[in-house]
Picture 1 (cartoon, one colour):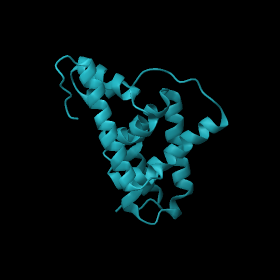
Picture 2 (cartoon, one colour):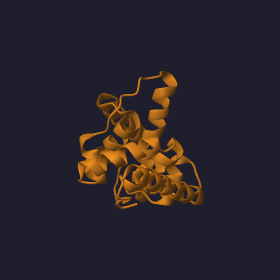
Picture 3 (tube, rainbow, N blue to C red):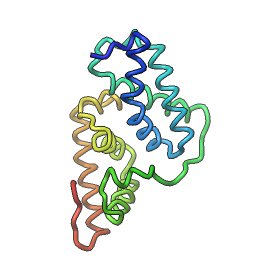
Picture 4 (cartoon, rainbow, N blue to C red):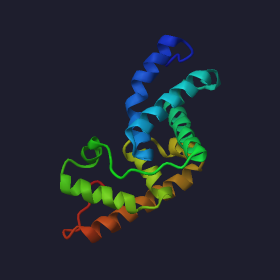
Length: 170
């Protein structure tokens, strides 16, 4: 159990989740500095709202939700130009074969946002259907449907671009 009400407990929380939050923030905004700002703002809001966290077992979901809300606030305040690209470790997280990773990355960008985000939350962040539902404000059934459709879409896109018709891990 993580006692985040105390400074030392909160510092452990920051160390434990900052890397994952940064990767997710970068995936959302495609800009390193903006991603760093989003993570910092997420932890600032988490510190201020730590008394509202009743169940320490949902810390990861709580932080991802805060980060998503901060990202939405950022774009509500001003419209930023999106930068193309992915973090360097994205390709390795998906598949160590650079050619396959490029295909996966391109196929992922072709998916609609409503299918892409739950898939990324599950595959890269390891979240369950119920946790993704909490983050996105959806029922678990809706999340599972979106994940199924996202995988089907990825298979279809990868099979059309891959002459061998093989899509690893999907």
